[in-house]
Length: 332
Image 1 (cartoon, rainbow, N blue to C red):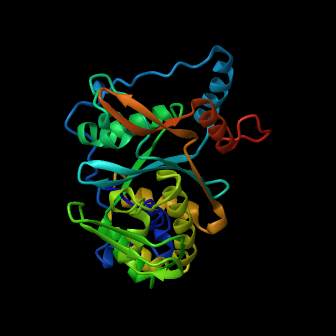
Image 2: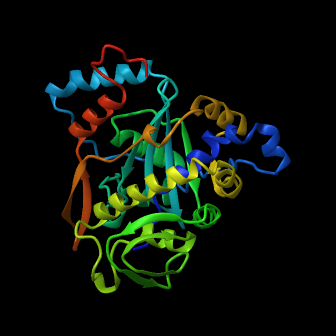
């Protein structure tokens, strides 16, 4: 149950909305900076990632071409958000920001998403969260872009565990409705997990917020969400909405507490530029969804594991909505 949180919208607010607290002079005076040491290379060359291809049906070619054309003409900026647990990217989110409409479309990508790389035939190696270990951020960018029908990804952002705790504590906690008693212990996790949260609507501090968004099931597979990882993703999405609502009124806290825990390939100048374009955004401007697909069991060798099988056709439809394909106005 070693998973990272889905709350990277924290980091998104940190650099997109930095302008709310003044200008780059404020950032410099307070010694706030964006880290640019995102692991791009990994241990293996990016060119060595050969993904098992999923063929496109002939009748779908025209639809894919229309989407490709819309992507090429669009001025959208796309981000890959990753939460790293040691060498695994156990949380993956794609976020597409439209500067014209000031809206952000977010797609959660389950960590168990099935992806087969040539030469990586182990059962666990066929999950997307294993790719970062060998191929770094560029490998993840290539893989996520492939899954999302070759959508361009312009920037990478990560946020660590400590940042989540400090930001939530700085906000005075976040209110959520805990669906059931969450209890789980794992001293081997990084950081060690000790979750014990009573059910009901309540304000969670940083430590319990991290436990809430990492929880999937109890020890010995007891309790937990009926639909497993998908149930956890839904709960995390509700947490994100509650967090955004509170963070939007406390941006100075978010930025000062969060900047030192954010790593990205963007410069401060670039982030401030996006911040100017994001001025005026509200909670209603965030659209959060899950990668279209289904959970199923697959046997790989002697192991039978649960994977999330993505649906290329439905993904194409979702991206067509984001890029306004077949709309009279395709400006975004």
